[in-house]
Length: 445
Ligand code: PLP
Image (cartoon, rainbow, N blue to C red):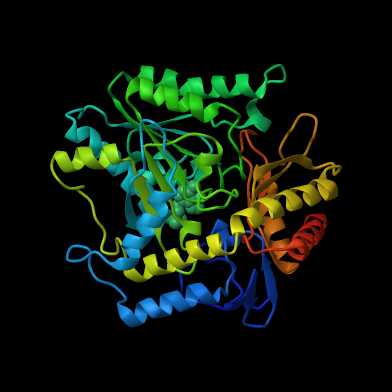
C-alpha cells in the first residue's frame, strides 16, 4: 500500500494512508495505480461512483456562470431548482407536507439546523419551556455540539459530555439484538416505540422539543431497519404530545435504500427531514433540511425569519452538483438498480457467509447492508471489543482492494462488530461478485 506522510491532521494521524489520485466508476485509484472497489461509497456518500461526467460538467458550467453568491443578497437558480426537485418528491400525509428546504454543507450542519429550527418553532408558539430532545442509543447524528448531544455513541461523546445539550436516549429499534423470542416483530415495534412515550411523560408534558432518529441506522449499528409499525407508533406518540419528529436520513436517504426518501418506504412522514451524503454524492459537500410548511409558516408569521445561517447556505455550485446527481439517478433508473443490486448482494452475502461460525446477522435494504459478526451464533455474544475485529477487517479489505465501512461492537455486549456495505448505485453483477469475493478473503485472513 502506498503511504504518504502528511501535515494534514486526518481521522487517525497515527496511521499513514494511501494517496487517492483518481476515480473510475466505482473504483478509487491511488497514486501507485492500485484500484480499490468502493463498496461503502466512502461513508455511504459516493452513490454515483467517482467519475460521472454529467455531474462534473454541470459543476464546471456553474463555475463558469457563477460559483457563489451570498444568500443574504440573492437566491440562485440551482438552489431553487434543487429545492423544487426535493420538495416535489418529498413524502406527505394529511397533516404535513415537507414544502421548504434549507441547504447546508453536510450532515452535522443539517441536524444542528433541524434542532434549532424545531426549537424556534416552539419559541414562536410561546412554548418556550420545551428544551429537551429525545434520541436513541446506537445512533449517530454528527459531531457538532447539538448533533453530538443527541448521538448515542458513548466514545464520541465522552470528552464533551459536560458541555452537551439536554437530551435523553431510549433504546434503538433493533430486532436482532432486542426482540424477545416470544415476541412478533409488530409487538416488539410497539414495545420499542412506547419507550418514547414513557420518556416524554418522565420529562414532563410540554418540555420535549423533538424526537430524532435515523430512519435506518447506519454507522453505529450497520443498516438496522425499523421493525414493522415502529415509526407509525412513534408518529402517533409525537402527535399526541405535540413533539416534533425529526428523521435523520443523512446516510439512509437520497436513494440509498432504493427509494429517494427512506421514510417513504416505511410509511411515515416526519416534521423535519435531514439529508446529506448521497445528495451531492461526494461531488460537492452539501446537506439539506426539509421542513413541513407548518413549521416554516409559523416562523414567518412569528418573528419573520429563522435565527440561523451559515456563509455557504444555498451554495450555487454545491446545489448545481447535487441537482445533476439527482437528475442522473432519475434518468438512469438508478433507484431500481439499487434495489436489484441490493437484493443480489444480500443474496450472495448470505450464500457465502450464512454458514460461517461468526455469522450473526445480515440486514438492510437496497444498497445499505449490514453484516454483523459474533463470537457465538446461538447466544449472539459479540467478539471482545479489544480485538478490534472491525479495524482488522477494514485493513484486510483495503489490502484486497476493497473499501468497506466496519465499526466495532459495544463493551456492554449490546452490539457486535459489523461491516457496513454501501456501494454506489451504478454497480452491476460483476461488482457484486467482486465485493463478496474480496470480503470473503479479507475476513478469512
Ligand atoms: N447523521 C448520520 C446518520 C450520519 O451517518 C452522519 C455521518 O456519518 C451524520 C449525521 C453527520 O454528517 P457529516 O459527517 O456530513 O457532518
